Length: 280
Ligand SMILES: O=C(O)CCC(=O)C(=O)O
Image 1 (spheres, helix red, strand yellow):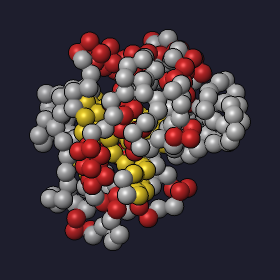
Image 2 (cartoon, rainbow, N blue to C red):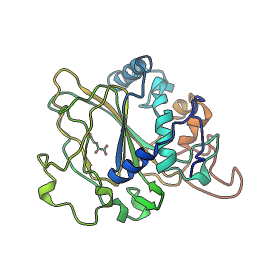
Image 3 (cartoon, helix red, strand yellow):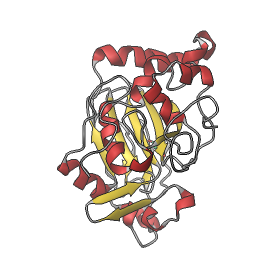
Image 4 (cartoon, helix red, strand yellow):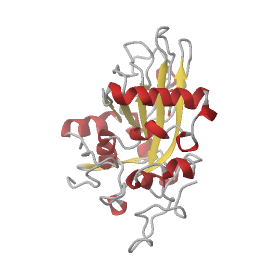
């Protein structure tokens, strides 16, 4: 499909479709890095907001008191992220020019100083999971569908050996159980990335992945781990407050609609969000 909607994000910026090379590599490996998506002018306020959210939450006005409140809302539907989600996740029957064909699932922000260790490989083989699991990956010739998808926003540079997320590329399609011998940090099957501050790394949660040790004593890792899902499916609990959502443009608000599909015309089909049609 080439006519993926919406074609602009909530700020009216044109969505950036995936290239054929990106599509092939995402399907092959289960993850993709999109380096340098944010300008310094965008990055500064987002970083400041994240640190206030982590350390002085009560100082934020109610409409900004969320990982994706205030200046950090632009991360939710960055044109390059929408381009990837339109391709790998969107259910086009629930998409329109005014409404995304995927939904926000859950998120968290992580601030890691040197010595923080999150090594814990999990996932893989999602091609063989049933729908209710959400960690699913499906494909047909020329099309793929990823259920739960994680977008990691790296708000600080990640250099070689610093400790970005580890991926066992291709394991979203693996039929055999992962051997213990490959599940150790020292295994050479792990792949990772380096990137400048303001980059996104996107992966299917059907893939085996892991955090690892953050080693850089000069620079912490500051990342948002935001998940998206099929509109009529939700994995994580919770949703931003009504005040936070109300401060967003309408198309961005469609990421927070209730978790159902329906049919026919709005309000029978879930192609809108209002106060009564909101996720929990
Ligand atoms: O800590 C990391 O780098 C990876 C976190 C993770 O496994 C996840 O968000 O699913």
